[in-house]
Length: 375
Image (tube, rainbow, N blue to C red; front, side, top):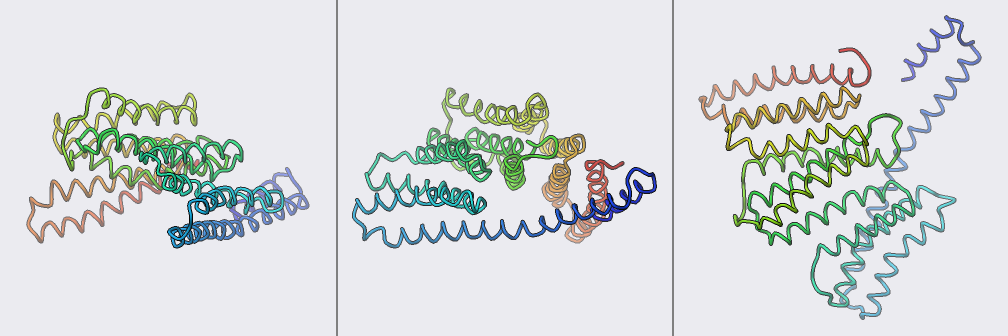
């Protein structure tokens, strides 16, 4: 970036647009910004590790002494655990905002433990998804009050986790094809909505956090979707029609509502993705296994095209990864067992060498195009 800026400044000086003094001031300003940015990520890494270790140590301390505490002390400990970190964060918010944000995040994380511990203290009726609902609600309230990205991230994780838990309980853990597919459909479409929430730069820290969450979750969600489309089940038992309708409506409708809130009128690619997922579940009985792999390849190409059009290279990278995984899965399931041992290994090696080179070469060109270059 420094070299590019230097070349641009030289060109502007030669064109008479700026003088040497102004160019020097621009170089000094940009150098200061780059230097400060280099030191920002170690600070956030230290804060993240501190948050994790503090939260883990607190929970271990509570677990070690829980049986020795009276109910009154247990309640007092739970209250202190939930409110103490938020109070500490509020006290230092003006002087140390980054540390305050971390403490508030620990407080929201401790809320979940406090909810379930309170249920244990008072022997409340067991409905464990209700604890996730209260936890997600607390994170959402903290997000509205504090307006920090960790609260947004926690809400974005906890709310879907609550819905998945509610579905599992409502279906009585009957993992018929519908039960498994509802979860995989909803998780994949929601991860895709998170990944693609940013349309133009610069993006807020909340949107960047959602993009990171989508980037972490979209590939595992794709694997879950692929397994559910295979029809693997643990215990096959029909799910009632009203429950099935409610499950599919939530699995498809909620990610689309999130996409509408994040992308506005440009939600049509998410609608296409939802149609692609629903067609995926119906394709195998109609067209067979080979069509399934072709459909996955179409989806991967669509994600790549989405990244190129909106100039986001991470979508190109994930689309290329899904395409490569589809080719390998097709080879292992449809081709390898039809060849001899040596021929299958030779073919696999050539596939890695030639196919990997071609995919990587194409990916690099498309990443350049997504960043504003020419194909």
